[in-house]
Amino acid sequence: MHEFSVIASIMELVKSEMEKAKASRVLEVQLEVGELSFLSHESLRFGFRALAENERGIEPDGLNIITVPAQVKCRKCDYSGPLTVEDTSLGHLGSPVFQCPKCQGPVEVLKGRDCIVKNLRMEVED
Ligand SMILES: [Zn+2]
Image (cartoon, rainbow, N blue to C red; front, side, top):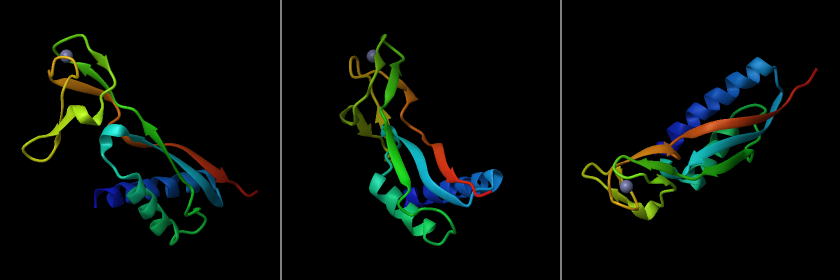
């Protein structure tokens, strides 16, 4: 499951940020998930909960997923803007192929492919 490896690396990042900030608890992890990352939000939450339960101080229900809409730019015409998942077809190797909604030309993905930790809400004891 791809989502599980994504969550595992997020958890590593959260732990190192916790250490740096000398935080005792992580209350919320804001995660930006691009529309075109094709990650299941349900699986991300499930994976996060499973890993957080074995960690000290990380709130298992603290994952807050923010969806980032796709943004593409066409290489043939001047189109630049959103891309809906319907504009996507699966290529030979099962990897998605993105097409311009206007001219079906190849597009460059500007936004919406990444999955990044945007913010952490931590509690620091002094
Ligand atoms: Zn185009």
